[in-house]
Length: 403
Image 1 (cartoon, rainbow, N blue to C red):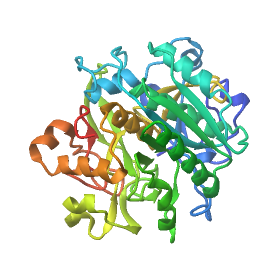
Image 2 (image 1 turned 135 degrees about the horizontal axis):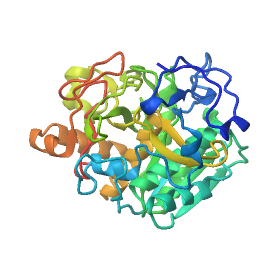
Image 3 (image 1 turned 45 degrees about the vertical axis):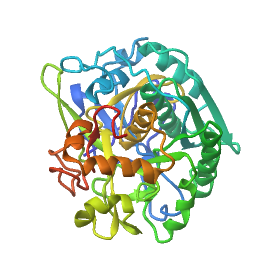
Image 4 (image 1 turned 90 degrees about the vertical axis):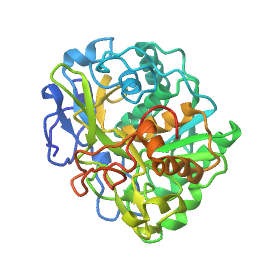
């Protein structure tokens, strides 16, 4: 649950007025959280316009003013938890071993403009000890700045880069959050990735399912491109394009730590989206779970960190005035896209990518080695349990194998 409050940080208060938010709660260390206006879907939005899937975590003034990143989950701690680097004891939030993979390109598709996107990414990379990012911002139209979508964009590019620092990172900005503009940006992202010889397109936005959504699946069929989409932040609900069989639907988990700060396990995040699609048929790669999903496409496919309690740290100057804490499945989609990029398989399509993962799932030995089966928690509607479920799908990634 999330509570309505007025301030993001002292700096953010100069820029943001939150018109509406859903009920609230306290995150770790007494941090408060807020759902921005851009993440709230209103009647009539489905099939017309999309929303973000971000939740702000309000940091203390002292935390945001320091040149060093505040304490929170970050690329190094996630790399340890997901065994992308040699794990250290407890995978502390102060972990320093960074992922060192990535090639070709990752495109992050968003709406509106973040005028500071490049410097945000450079500041983030420098603070965590990375080299200089290979980054390009591409505008499709003339998108105006938007404070909430700017935070979304900083999050997307920083966590895709954080998992795959040697990939060419594209930020593709749609003119608005209308479906028409976002699908035009998706097509541009496809073109850019194909020009790089292939890669991943991540979409942290979404909207409620709607009759006729299948007609938009064509935007996620580019040869040589694997598409990802957040499963949403409305517990146990299904959104589009997460429901499309032509995207990897990425759900959300909560990273559990003990009183000493050591990583214990992952559980299902209570607000993560997931469930059977109303309008999309079960794709062939999900035949292995047909007894669970029936004739409908099941979401998510797999999951990673997304909780507003075990939040990640980002840098965003335009809205936050510096460091921010962020949760939501907007975290998990670019994170997983980066992991898949760094795995280096570069499957020819989303079906091939998901096919590889579900093939792993069908092999008990590989499944145990390559995936963390999330068996505790729920997304409010669906409980996490052994094997695939509507809570976290296959589970969370362990190593680059099977990705």
